[in-house]
Length: 75
Image 1 (cartoon, helix red, strand yellow):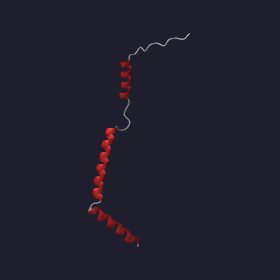
Image 2 (image 1 turned 45 degrees about the vertical axis):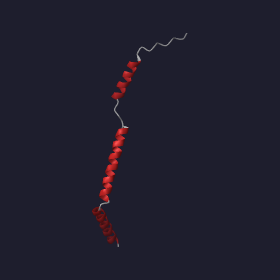
Image 3 (image 1 turned 45 degrees about the horizontal axis):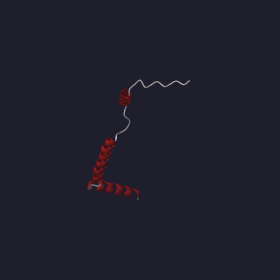
Image 4 (image 1 turned 90 degrees about the vertical axis):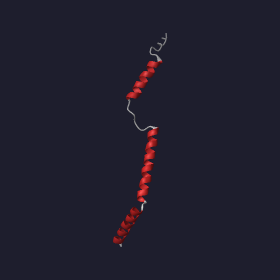
């Protein structure tokens, strides 16, 4: 003879409450979409500032002088 399965003794709300508690207890691993967006914007802003600094007149002149000095010592 086969036994009939026991009906669920725990209501759905109890199951959901246990699941929600378990999810809240586990630490987050990684960034959410909003954090990716903020991180991307910050990286782009930093790249823009760095580009402006590197392409500024004094930096280009300094790098040119450095390369010319290095080439002059090789020849």
